[in-house]
Length: 173
Image (cartoon, rainbow, N blue to C red):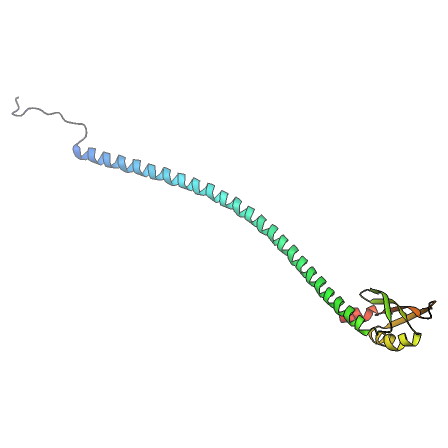
């Protein structure tokens, strides 16, 4: 038997099959690369999340430290405001005390506490002290006691101790 055409080589796969195989292989390679990229990104995001979580913990510690410092500063501020207010009250009290003292009486020393006032001074007579200074002191303080000592010049040194009862102060505060 003879053929009119020259025989050709036949391939194992047809051209159509080869195209499909190249296409399927390309898709598998692309999907594998995409999967590896996704796995890499997930791992990268997990590392970044751990880093951000560590930063968050550090920032929370810093916030706690700053809150403690703010609390300390606020306590110091309140204390300084209280001291300032007490100083203003003390200044006004001292001014009022010195305004009470008449010209005839000389003060040598004044000790002022929260609940008491002790005055050391000199007066020409006991009556001058009693009328000009003791009366205003008795109206301010609950107890007022004065001791007089005669000096060689004929004047009197005195120690006046004046106190406010604590129960009434605690009730007012």
